[in-house]
Image (cartoon, rainbow, N blue to C red; front, side, top):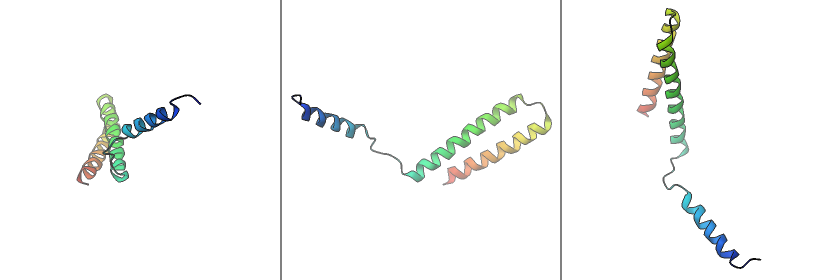
Length: 79
């Protein structure tokens, strides 16, 4: 066994402990954050599609989808 092996192991364990974040949100909060990010991503895609859409029926569909996504975002913000 190499000299100083035990002390290196202690240093590595100490570094691992320091890497952990101290203020990790609970699982429920993480779930809300993930759902919010997913809705925001969908909203971005719908807005992009709406800018280039030419068919009036498709534009109406996108507008209704956008309103639904906005309602979901506001409901998540209320929690």
